[in-house]
Image (cartoon, rainbow, N blue to C red; front, side, top):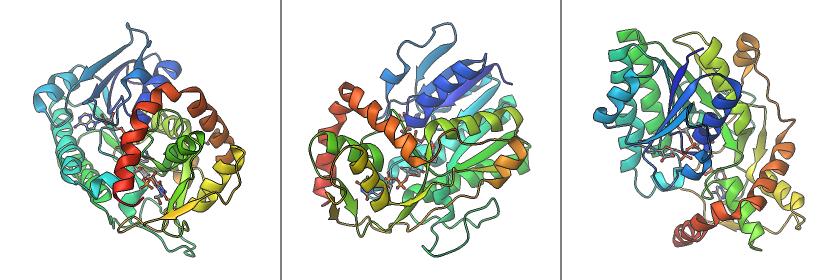
Amino acid sequence: MPQRILVTGGAGFIGCNLVRHLLERTDASVTALDKLTYAASPAALDGLPADRFRLVVGDVADAGVVDPLVAEHDAVVHLAAESHNDNALVDPAPFVHTNLIGTFTLLEAVRRYDVRLHHVSTDEVYGDLALEDPQRFTEDAPYRPSSPYSASKAGADHLVRAWVRSFGIRATVSVCSNNYGPWQHVEKLVPRQVTTILDGGRPRVYGTGSHVRDWIHVEDHNAAVLAVLERGTVGETYLIGADGERSNLDVVRTILRLMGRPEDDIDLVADRPGHDLRYAIDASRLRADLGWRPSYDGLEAGLRTTIAWYEANEAWWRPAKAATEAAYAARGQ
Ligand code: NAD
Ligand code: TDX
């Protein structure tokens, strides 16, 4: 197990949960590199032990920052990214900068200093499936990204694999389905609806709401990332998912029920352009090869604790809520 781990995007949703996970489950010391964009939660890193954790503010696409930092670590987990599809449809430029140039910059540093890399990707790189398709995504699925976000993540994945093959860097890739849990920005489906309901409003679902996502709690994602870092085979890709396929309407109805509101208290609003219909992950290889299992028994169990977390942490999400809703309103969503 590496003893000095650099987590890029360590102040983001998955990153801050991963930093805590690594500090709790390993002996390693952890550095978070984060540009602190609108999506970051530095507050999530408050109070961590100063002898084992530090936050470095910087751009993953800046070799002047990345190079010396990578040289000081045994492993890098790469999460830094622009991550929200709706933003990519307004301005794709930061997605190309961070997701592609940032990944390239990191790859050159891990090549130079021979540092182990784990690259975190998304099931969106495979494009979408038909609702009735019996297939799920596997490690062999062809890349067919359909949005500026997923295309930038797909490009990053290709760069990582090319650096493994051409330069022999020690890298693994994981491809995960939709995450939810504490510290997720209110722009994303679950926290947007939970906080809207807490404010007494009606959830807003795109199009018909029949689009399907495959949900996993962020803790289960991060446990899988740690398993790959500890026991994964260099050069391999691992798909991470918890058999959590649900339509958006189904997810939002469940949230409404858990929060004591009528299940049909929903507004159907303008659809997302190019909206992917369905994602579904087959995580058999991860389960068989690394013995990983999700700890949450289904989406409803994870939603209960997530709702309770947002109820208890209004001071954290409140400052972002109004501006996020104003941006959605401008798009009729
Ligand atoms: P997030 O948007 O919550 O966090 C991203 C973090 O990266 C933020 O703290 C931001 O400040 C930082 N960042 C952005 N640009 C940067 C730059 N140029 N330099 C340094 N830091 C920068 O995203 P997330 O949901 O935590 O996702 C993390 C990673 O996991 C991403 O690579 C994403 O593609 C992937 N992923 C996310 C999900 C999901 O459901 N959220 C699913 C699968 C994969
Ligand atoms: O208000 C909403 N209403 C709605 O119907 C929002 C915010 C979303 N949606 C729909 C769009 C999607 O079908 O819900 C689904 C989930 O939307 P997002 O939370 O925006 O996630 P998605 O676009 O599926 O991508 C997420 O999972 C894969 C993450 O944001 C990505 O970073 C990750 O790679």
